[in-house]
Structures are given as structure tokens and as C-alpha cells.
Amino acid sequence: MTFRNVLRSGWIRGVAVVGLIVFGFATRSTWWEPSQNWVRATISGNRKVSSLDSHDHGSSAGGQDPQAHEGHDSSGSLELSKQAQGNIGLTPEYLQPITLGTFRRTITVPGMIVDRPGRTRVEISTPIAGVITHVHAVQGEAVKPGTLLFELRITAEELVSTQTALLKSVGELDVENREIERLTKVSESGAVSQKTLLERKYAKEKLEVLMNSQREALWLHGLSERQIDDIATNRRLLRDLLIVAPGPDQHGSEEMKLSRQDVRPVSLVKQDAQQEKAEQGHAESSSGNSAPLILQEVLVHKGETVADGATLAVLADYSELYIEGRAFEQDAEMLTKITELGWKVAASFEKPGHQSTRIENLDLIYSASEIDSESRSLSFFVRLPNEIARETPSPNGQLFLDWKYRPGRRLQLLVPVEEWVDQIVLPVEAIAREGAESYVFQQNGDHFDRVTVQVTYRDATHVVLKSDGSIFPGDVVAQRGAHQMQMALKNKSGGGADPHAGHNH
Image 1 (cartoon, rainbow, N blue to C red):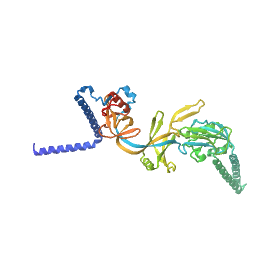
Image 2: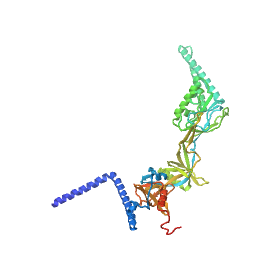
Image 3: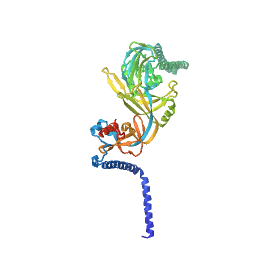
Image 4: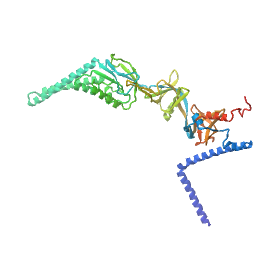
């Protein structure tokens, strides 16, 4: 082969190598992660084989038959039947490959479920004095927005006199309109001067101004524009007041016109069956899919005379609550950091039998602007969505509810303070401890091999393991029942004398 051919072949190989490097870099997203998993699995498998070989050699040197182990070290391997796995709760969901994840170190802060100020409690009041003629509400029942609660006969003298004055003005305005119409025809023939017609028009304008002021007075008393128009059209006074359950978040246009407030506790309607049905239908459509309200207190009875502004009942909306946590005053910056980073808070509820229920991914809403001068603690509030635990209908048609979370219940808040990425995180039930040693049980076929690990952090629910080559991502370990498996392994080996102690007690 000539020098030129050698040079040419070398140049071609160089181009091919560069091309392979460029191609591998461009497609690294498809082969890099699988190759890493293959490398980890190979290292893990080699480590297991090396461990088994060392045990086998040791057994052979001691004069034992290496086949007696059947490929497993009897002192560090355990075989569990399906029944045994079920007894310790080792279901398939607790036999999952190890993955690297993000772990947030938390601190425990006491907390208590509280009402949302201005939102949970809704007081039902009447803007008009009257006599309670009927009580439809039953204390403790759940009601939908728009449900009829009370009927009241209006006795407010000012409201009655204002309605009467409005009806009188409406009648006088009709008379003026007819007179103006007559004078307009007569004035065209010249029988009546234009001055007389102009005076009647001025009188009409005065009546319209008076009517507008009377309408505004009725509006201030709580009547809607539609109801005022109804008085003027039908020439009938409103005598009865129907008080319905409000919608805390949805408000019909009429409710907004009634009071210009976010929550309107009453609706004034005529005592007419068809109109009452239409009003209830309007309330239901405007309330949407609002959560039911609990009628906490009924404060009046049939026949009672009530003044304007009197509270008739108290409703509670438990669909969303707050958790009030109590942190130390030096934790103010930590709470600000959590809010800025959008970290989630967890809550732990104690249950009978020393069990606990944990709720994840709760939002920290805000922290108080002042520190309590007596306890030197800082309050902060976490949003707690609620859900209905049980519905109990009664024979009389009422519905009674039990909410899952109730104000006044105490709990523990787990507040994140530090974040670690790419960590091996396991449930605390996956770790067995004996003295200074910590173990996990790695699945190997139909056996579980005990593997020594180093714990870098431990709390009440999770442990973080050091990546020292003892276990790798992709290894399947028992994430529950490690303590029971350790006890079974000790019983299997005799569980007698401590081989490191040198004597028995």
C-alpha cells in the first residue's frame, strides 16, 4: 500500500470518527439515560455476584457445601411467601424501583383549622321591621342558595308610607299625562293658550322628580328596581318579605341592585305563588354549583317581632377553610421565602390508634403582619379545601351533612425549609435499624437481600440515603415492612448470641 493510500484511509477513518461523535451528540437524549441505567444495573449485578462469591468462598473454606446456599447468603437473604408479604403490607405498590427525586427538609409547626374571616360565616338579617309569620329553616340542615328560610309580614311604617306616597304620585302623574294630552289637542285649535299647556308640563316634571326621590327611598329600604316597578305598575303595596339563603360567591343582578353589597341575605317578593316560584328559579340559576351552606343557628321563632337589621339566622360555608399555623418570630423570613418559591405545605392529622393522615400540596396564603406580643409567635395561614364526608337525608326532606375537616381541630404543619435535588428518598418504613447499622431489603428474584445503607437524613415519614454504591436507581427495594423482615431474618439465623459480643447474658 502506497503512502498516499495510507494517508487517504487514515483521513477517511478520521472523518468517520468525527461523524460518529457528532451523530452521538445530536442523539444523546435517546441513548444517554438508557445507557446510564444499564451501567447502574450492571454494577449492581456485579456487586451482588461478588457478594455471593465471597460468601460462597467463605463457606467452602469452612468445609461447608457451597450448594447449600442455592445462590443466596442465608444470613442476609430472606424468602417471603405471598401470605407473609400480605401480612406486612408489602403489596406491589410498595415494591417499586428506586428513583432519584427532590426532597424538601421540613420543620413541624402546630396548627389549627379555623374559619375564613368574612367568608365562612354568613349572617341572615332583615333590613325591614316586621313579624315572623313562618320559619322554614331547621337548625343544622344543609341549604342551597335561594332556599326559602323565613316569611315576614312588613310592619315598618316608613316603608308603608313611602310606598303609599309613590302610588299617589303615580296616580297624579297619570292625571297630568291625560290633561297634557287633552290640552295639546285643544291648543292646536287656539282655544287654549300655550302658556297653560306649558304649566301642565312643568307640573308633570315636578311629579317625575318627586317619584324618582320616592323610588330612591324605596331602593334604600332594600327593594329592587323590578319590585319598585311592580308597585308602580300593579298599584299594590308589598306586604310580605321572603328571606332566602344567599350565595356567598354568586350574585344575581337583582341582588346587586338591592344592596350593592357582595352578599345580600334577603329577597323581597310579593306573596304570589307563580312569582315565588320564578324567584326561586332565578336564585338557583344565579347560584350555580355553590356548595351547600350549613344552618348553624336559628335565632327567631314564629310570631316574633323583629326590628330592621336584626339577625335571624347564621349560615356557615365549610367548603374551604384555613389552617392557622404558629411559627417563631425568627421564622418570618423563612415564610416569605416559601411564598416566593411557591413551595407547598403538608398537614398531618392524628387519628385513633396512633395513626396519622397526611395532606400534601397545600398553599401558604399569607403570614400575619404582626407578631403576637404575649406568645411571641407569628401566625400564618394555609388554604384547606374541604369535602363532604357523609350526607344524611331526613324523612322530613331536610339534608344533614358531615364535613371532613371542621374548625377547631388541631394538627401539625410540615413546613419546607430546604430543598435537596437528585436524592434517594424512601419511606421510613423501608429502613430497618439495628444498633448503628441501617438496612434496606432489595428484591432479588424470589428473595430479599439485606443491604447496608447510610442514612443522611431522617424525619417522621421519609429517609434520605447516601449514594455510596450500596443501592442504585432502578433497584427494587421493599418500601414497607423492613423492621418485620429484619426480625424474621434474625429468627431465621437463630437470633441467639450476638457474634460481636463474645458472650451471652
